[in-house]
Amino acid sequence: MDFKTYLKAVRPFSFPASIVPITIGSIWFFSNTGEFNLFIFLLVLLGGVCAHSGTNLTNDYYDYMNGIDTLESFGSSKILPLNILTPQKIFNLAIFMFTISFMIAILLGVLIDISLTIIKITGIVGGFFYTGPPLCLKSRALGIPLVFVMMGPLMTIGAGMAQDPNFSLELLLISIPIGCFVALILQANDLRDIKWDKRSGIKTLPILLGYNCGRLIFYLLGVCAFLIVPILVYFNIVSPISLLVLLLLPMFLKLCYKVDSKIDEQLLDIDVQTAKLHAYFGCILMISLLLK
Image (tube, rainbow, N blue to C red):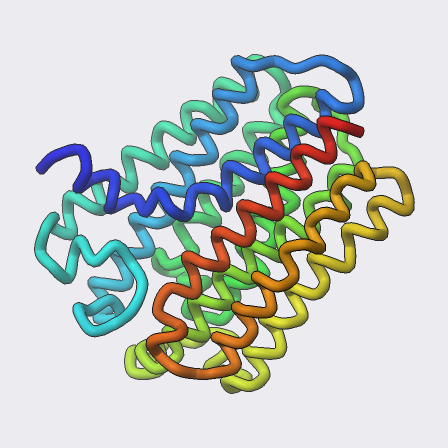
């Protein structure tokens, strides 16, 4: 199999969900001190992307093995349903990615502080048990809070602490809208897949609460992310330039329209479109921090 096949298997379109919080955490430190360790940043970034890849791969593996991921269902890389790679190869690749991330976690603990090792390993464990047994957190409707914490505060604060081990409340506040948007991506995915998830017997928030309540959660996550930014500006945590995120509101409203339609064709790429919104939002926050 060629490199492109394995690249498709790790779903690189989703990587901004880990690149954005790590970069924001690192830039925040630079904007406050004028100092920046490029090597440490790249190390943290590699560890984060590898953990994210491992999570995507184990998600595809267990969804396929449990009959959730089929040719008819939406989402996933479709590498397994199309028999492009065997389940064992996908699982082995996932373990390889998690192993790289684990080794980086140990190295960061040696070079900087043991707290970074704890943060990184927490992320790895959460990533595996997102769909992996025995916890299977995604199937217990815990996916939204998990990704909010893991790819919002945990990644953002972890990246900042890699540059400076001291905890920052400001960075925690900045991480909240980022976590909201990552949770928004997952909620979009769960709303789209509600029919297939019901057939498979797994539980997500839209299944437990119904599509209409799931739709309201989608709206609230997005609204909260946008509303927090003016508060951050008011307390001089980020630059007023960050208010440019409000220009993304039409894009968010378009996604709300798709969710409201309940039409499969409208929802087909909603996770990808929501991921783009997250990336644009994150880029504006990065620029505002650099210009603070």
